[in-house]
Image 1: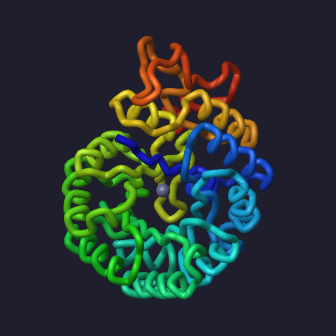
Image 2: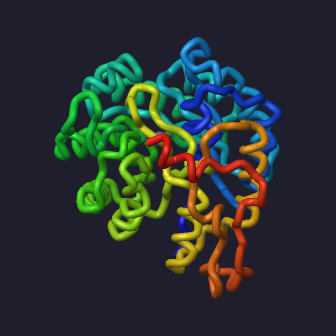
Image 3: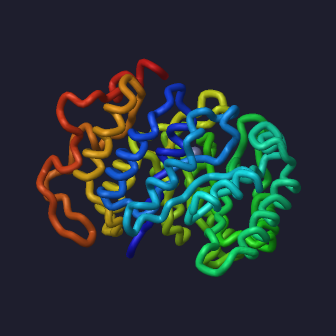
Length: 332
Ligand code: ZN
């Protein structure tokens, strides 16, 4: 079985940290991630540069990424204006965040849930007006699908109803996001089972953060519900500026190790990820990066799902590369 690991570090990760990564460093990092075998990378966000100065170079980053053969270049756009910019730049896949929490929706994209669904409809109409072959895929990630730091509980029935309305609005795929680490495995399995029975193959990616340490447990629960696409960020960087205390995405390195060890083919090479991690840490000195696999490398007898054995230590970050793993406890 093939799993798509969708790397979101250059978007979700970089937009949530204080430092801005230089455009050419972003290009080097994205290339290194693609070289490691990642087939889809969310490279930027078409948000007003005043709101997210870290993403002001999104056009250039997309254009650079489009020169990488075989890579699906994804970008986030919160509204029609952003989607227009993303399309103009040639983005293959546009991800639109739509929050299931009414209060989070207002805080994050300044629209009600209903307005956000209508905006997705307008973006899909724009897509449909383009010549065949130039239409980007429109994916919606329903954020706060498992709970919200502002509102608290988010009704599961409402999340599923939103998914249905978004499908009617024309979204190609609809996934569920937990940017605040509220999801638990039982809830994840229940929600994705409902989503998949409603939407079939239009049910999209699972996007988990590791805020309460449940990220990979939630991945296993989503796998059991039939999910085959998972967002992750290298070094676990990222969070949500509107969710105080929210730490990063699930760590790409740890996710790839787990999936491969479970016999699920990702096509991603762990040594390639270690090389990309070196580019990341050298480009953002002092920035917190996470992950267990890069500290220890693979164990004796490790086998990739499709490619067989790998030497012990594969995937281990180069000695001397900055790592903040021990500091993590201190920061918490
Ligand atoms: Zn996220």
